[in-house]
Length: 274
Image (tube, rainbow, N blue to C red; front, side, top):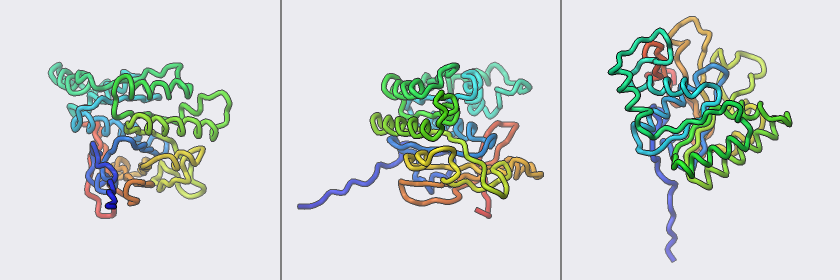
């Protein structure tokens, strides 16, 4: 009898960066992507760029759980991407026309759903909200920033056990609902040598807490930036490394993106050293 072999599904959406798409094949539903970096190295902004790309490329609903900032800050930061002006910065001026354009293209699309997590970072609360986003609001893409704050809020104090629990439950929801789930995780400080804020390379062994984060993820992306560098271009350039790629197995440096404080955007740049 003839055997029919079905390949893995193609991407339903893409990252905002060509180099990253070339290595990962884009964004597929029913996959869990972990984004990791040292503290203060642009993980949240990287996630916002993904949200904006999803808004522009798809017609699907998006669930947003940014646990370290207010819903207002998240909303203003997303509106900023539509007009290339950082509206969350008080000193930045924008006309009423620009504000309306920013609103219409983001919050006014009625496709963005936010979670106000104040006082509600227990594991079961987070899991239930992810499931509600997927089942009740038909969100095909959900972004959780970050899992470390959920773990640190648990009363039993066993970080490894808490990470195992939440990552296993998140993985089950991905399989159950078919969503694409992006999860931000912090890194442990490297043993010896330079730290991540100095541009140290990321690896699976540095994921904070349990090895389940790397094991259960389909894709792991590491962000690397020398945040203390004297050169302003180097200081604001983030290298995106594919640490794990269950889709094709290809890993390594994928692209470099430059943050512009005047536009509030992270845009891909050519870098011959990649």
